Length: 272
Image 1 (tube, rainbow, N blue to C red):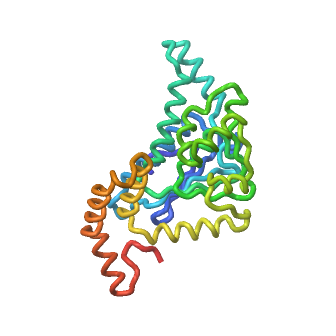
Image 2 (cartoon, rainbow, N blue to C red):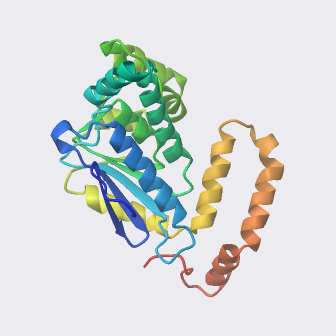
Image 3 (cartoon, helix red, strand yellow):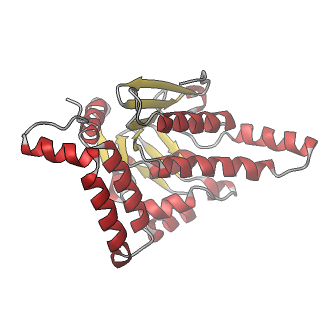
């Protein structure tokens, strides 16, 4: 990474980039600086494609036993006061939009995204959990959507809640100031696996092993096609899907994958 980070810890291990929200004293509440640093770390990871140290998987987690307590309200209020003193702009809306752009960027990344969820997963943290390709939860995780109980709106989170959980469950959580333990989150599909604290790292290793067995360009193309399938019925995607398949089959990855299958060996991209 090109710049030092103050609110996140960034560690690359092979093709896996670990991004840890690192403000444990406030349960990793998300400041504007953290939003900017997460955007920068993602951009640099995506820019590494095709290089010797290319990132293929992002692991997003929190320090100190908690994932994220949502937005840092003190930070947002300070931004609003500064803007009011300077030009009168709606700094609260601007800050909220920055968080929305963060979620959207992580939702559309071609890289695989794994969230490791422990302790508090609240507000904006819940939104980030919803955009992960794979969400692993510790049995310590507690999920909350407290915005409506605080007199505000989960504005940027709402679309990702609907996408992850469907309209009915998203609406239920919104109107009740939703509180879920890990088992309930698994039941409604918010997370994909729940582990004890002593088995969480083993579960993460297993997920990373499976992801790294997949070809990175094929994985990215599959994510893009699945994303489009949310908004189009299957019939309208037939021609596009055929084109994507043909391109992948004729690519260097496709040729390597077929050759490896015939020769009964692992493809070059697979990590042993």
